[in-house]
Length: 403
Image (cartoon, rainbow, N blue to C red):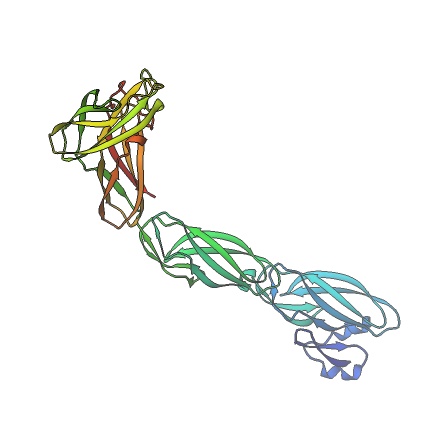
């Protein structure tokens, strides 16, 4: 029997026996075909070719088997493919006199090294790998340096796929020892970026990481927690409203003001009114003019606005008095951040934002904000429960919140 040596495509040398030269029988080794079997057939497996590259678990691959026919007619042969000692596939093939290459298509469900045998002829080993072994996280970037507690921040992850197909992969975003978020992705061949949007509920410094690759540290701060209160104690109270002539076409529209609060400026505004019987003067009032006057604490004095006669198309007039400005103290019990501060006018039935401003507070910082009172805007804000010509009962309040 003649010994022939073949080189498989995977680089494995496979030596098989070919029937026909009985004088060589003494040299047969572990890969020799049984002589009794060779006497019964002229078909012989002469080469087995397995893939050189690593095969991904679950993906189909090919094994080629060369079968030689030393006869002069087509002959039939049953071929059995075994991997790691288990039969994977069996085929009945017709082999012409010139021989034939038979292909087995199969796949493997476990990673590792696998021995291939076809009809007792060893065909070397196949290496299979899990899909995730082809995928590597190469970079993690934290897109924010600092955010507040429970505010969103983004982390960009670059993933490399060394395979030739897209594979599913699970990315876990961790901060130090805790898993913050899990994302299931499909990774095409090559480099690709994926983004996490996460939140953290406790302040501190954290290092986001994915698969052991770390990004830049991020600082989580407490949210700004502002509070506000009106600190000005100015409190003007008015008496009866009246007018007097000061010339042929000019009048003083006046009222007695009693300041029961702290010292400060008081503003008095004059408005023409379309219908005095309307319950809400603000719906039908036109601003004319205003004056500002300084009052000491506890001082009572007259305030007057000089203007012309009441227009013929107006039913009367109204006077509106209020502090010229108010101070608001704003304090922060939380972390740094931008805030909004609102001056509120409160009556018995409603609360209306009169003015708004914005600012920035550091942790534990307190600031003072001064609001000018706009009496024209105030009377046009649909405050209810006016008297016919007098200012309604109302108070000022302040609110602050994160911007």
